[in-house]
Every structure is written in C-alpha cells, then in structure tokens.
Length: 266
Image 1 (tube, helix red, strand yellow):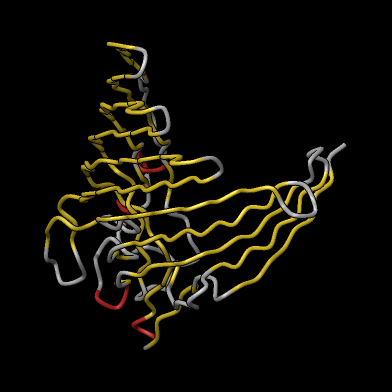
Image 2 (cartoon, helix red, strand yellow):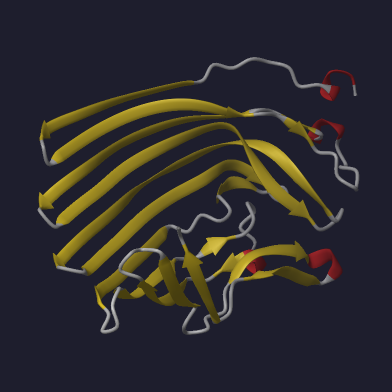
C-alpha cells in the first residue's frame, strides 16, 4: 500500500474562554477550542473495494460557543447557549450491506444549534424544569451507492429535543422525605446512517418516566421505585441495513420497565 499504510502528522489543540459578570445574578461567556480525533484504518472482516479507502485521516474540530446563566428571581434560573462546530475530515461511519462490513470515511461537516434550560422552585419542595435544544448537523458532499453527491444529515442527530421534569418532595407521615417525580423526553425525527436511508429513519417519539423515592431523616436509607417508558412506546436505538440480504436489523429501546433500589450509607 506504500504511503497508504501509515498516517503521519501533527496537530495543535487549544482552548480559550472569556467570562463576564455584569452583576451577581448574570454570567455571560464565550469560548473557542480545537481538538482532534486520531486517524485509523478500515480493517474489517471484509475487504473494501478501493485501496485508498483503508486509511482514515485524523478528525479536527473547531468549536465556538456563547452562553448565558441568569438568576431572574430567587427561585428561577435560565441557562442558554449557542454553538457552532466546524469539522475538518469528520470521521463518518457507514455500514455497507454489499460487503457486510463497516467503513469510516472522511468528510467535512458543520453543526450549529442552541440549548436552553429553565429551572424553577415555585414553593418549598416543588421543582420544575424544562429544556429545549435545536441541532442542525450536516455532513458535506456524501456520495451514495448510485454516485449522487450531496450534503446529508449526521446520524443520531434529531433537530429538536424537548424535556420537562416535575418533582415534589414532602415529609412522609412515617418520617423522612417522600418524593414524587415525573419526566418526559421528546425527540424529533432522526437517521441512523449518514446516507439518510428511508429504512433507517426513526420517526419522532416521546418517552414518559415516573419515580417514587424515600430517604430517611438521617439520610442513611434511600429507597426508590422507577418506571421507565410508562406508555410502552416502541422506538429504536440503532438500526443496521442489510438490504442486500433483504432485512433490516437493529436495537430497540426499553419497553415499559419497573425497577427499584435500596441504598444504605454509613
């Protein structure tokens, strides 16, 4: 393979951040950083058709972020941030059913979006939180099996993610603290591969979870019972396309599940 049998080079990583506090309730920050992910080789069970596809260059990420942390009231806090990621030689992953093997290849990519979280305690023992994030993640100039070249969405990158949580803690009649908690998580449509194949498209879904917990007054004993996926929603965590063998296989998420725990701390 000659020069293709080795990956050689150097890199420079850095981080810089500036914080500004106009008053005791506000923090504004901005930062930039650069990092690398080492190069590798495609050495799977099955050979790739092209020799030049074996080496994978190092991935370089330059990230920019600005954010705000604001205490608007004694019991209300807002956290917000916006970011932009510039990838050079992003290491994209693809499973190729024609060779029944996986391949990593380099392509430039950009990601930008925002995250926000609102926390409040309207009265003693009651906590509410809500979060939202938007993500625009695109891999540039990806070629499919038919030779079509276009920008495509990153795998596992839902555009919109929403979350909410409510928790109420109060003194139990028998002593200690009893807490009731419920939370919901929503994810918009996402793909499981960089080619954005229709068979590997996961529709939007929402999960509801609940929890009841108790801790003793001396904080030694803790008991909890949790139910995940209360509505028994079917969703997939990941999927592989074996279309050449006429089937798709993947891993599904948790079905409705009840779990409990008991903890003692000296």
